[in-house]
Image (tube, helix red, strand yellow):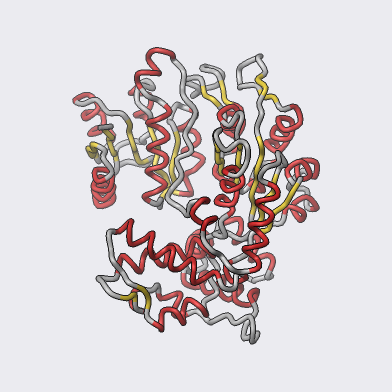
Length: 451
């Protein structure tokens, strides 16, 4: 059983995180200061340290030097301290995670850290294995693909996936947040001749500019400060399979040049190495912004855009998939019942009325979250209005047939409401709307909102 040391001065948060990780099969101890953390590290052997960046007596970064890279360290930090977290990674921290984070996110990064630095392999070979693609629980591509979705939009999407999957074409997947772009990418991989090879997903928006080259191409031990072991990049890890670049529009311009060169030459070189490595990788990308606009504004390279866009897929929003709602609701109810060990039988008529009139700005992801939350809050029988989030019940309805309110008007109103609820804190508003901050800024600009 892997042992984790949490160093966090917020007692309540630390204890909640400890209980959660214990339930997931980890042995967990807590320290509330750097001094206490040092004492525990002397007394016991740990497989991983999860420390806050700011602690009462010192910064969590100091522990990295203390341990001399023997144990992976994950830094917990607020959004405003990301630059400090990147500094910590240069000093040897494995990675960082921004607060507030979801349970799935912390499990993903812990699993990645533990699988990347297994003691037996590190001591014998001095080589780090590539990070595994440990994704949070989400709709499986095979499960969603097997559902009898009846809308013309879904049927057209399935037809296009079936046509492009057997090829080796690069596919640019576009659509709003929560529509299932990664699920679509995985479906393309699963139906291709590469299905038995790796599918590696990378969130381009989450990679610090300074670490992008290492993430894509890997590095050799000692090639830069913090390079404590050899690292296999995602291109090499995906060799023979598929590399999925999510939110590719967020990739800094300099890194776009590096990506383009790798795609053109089909070979990469680890940082610090003179040896070139041939790679056979199919590239799938996704974005929720208009890359054509980004090209015109000079934020995205036109040659890279055309290289990635050999075939494009537009994922329809949930509101445009007439007839699919019932199928998806029943599916997520079944999944939630299994996950939460419940036996909820269905929904009241009032709940169905809300579901059918609500605009679903967060699309399929929002629908899944709402149903899972409702199942958790319902004792038995049917789900009632009391189990639904207030923002769903209070929002205006959307009716495409009668034209009561257009989708753009609905989205605009949702943005304004979210900003007001968060006292115009855009980071919190983006989280409430379940979109990235960059997407929120783009939509604010699109609607010319004076905020």
